[in-house]
Length: 458
Image (cartoon, rainbow, N blue to C red):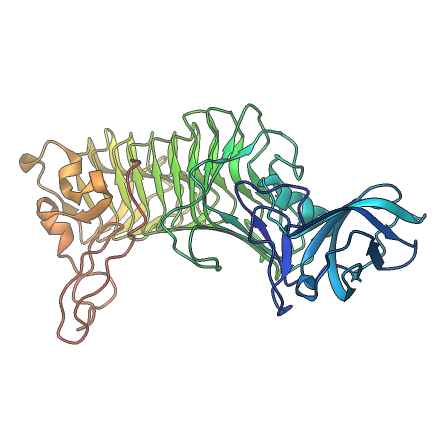
């Protein structure tokens, strides 16, 4: 046997990396992994080699422990994590496989339940015992979880996931479920070491998906090559980051690489905020480049980067503020931009680096730029905002200091322009740029404001 695919792992402040750390979610018993301390700690367990029956003179086993994971180590035991599959009495249980190393185990340590203490321990148990379909949760605490080892998949280390399995790692504070939107997100902080990345989703296998969500990664002045890394670009495999923030402190080279990013934020990456990513409703601030070679970019904001968007095949509803240029391309074929806005660029709003690589612009706006375009084949629905009424590109937005990047009255021409897609009663107008304002309509009461995740760093 092996550990069940339905086991869920837990990390909490105050836990221990020698706790059981996991629970089979469909066991129908008591989940003891959702507490810092082990429910039962023993130091006298024994097992006959070749068997799965574990005994203890001290005892304390209960039927409620079935489905929980226990940690076993000691003389003639194979150190690791085992699922409790059956309960006989207070002194006897069965586990999912033989825990011995070829000789009878005695005087062993066994801990039932209790959460892990470090982010790296998720990587370790998945590397040692992972089964496709497993998931893990990291509970919010004001104190960050430290990565203090540059090695992958060790206690206190960075995490690297296998290239052929589906895994999910979710941060939470109150709602322990995949897809939660808890406001408080646990922070994973790199301390005094330089791993290749804080987390590496290595998956390149078709039909497998790895996802992390609701987490903050802080490089804390350590020069990582990539903070959040994926390897699914150009394949049918999927590595996904959802609601993940990366703080780079001007030293990490790249915030996000080679994955699908949804509602993610990258701050102060020395090279790029997002590279080779498929991005939706994402935000880059203070990076060398905001979005570089993205597969797609939709409803994204680049603020105060060296440049905003580079080599986007087809940016849609994106906003670039500041930098040398808003949108640039070196592609050999024409690039298409729809409903995008570039303001405050010192050189160009939209630039193609070579006459053979022109832009096609549809409903795109510029304001306070050195020049609107360079090498543009078609400029359909052109909007040039009135520079005479403004001296600060941030005035084109409602309240950027509080993360409201909707277009203000200063950008009225872009705010009330219909989309290239035909409008309807339920979609009277959509703004140019990443965030849409709500238009009251008789049938729906207003379209939603899209892109609420994008915001300046507080």
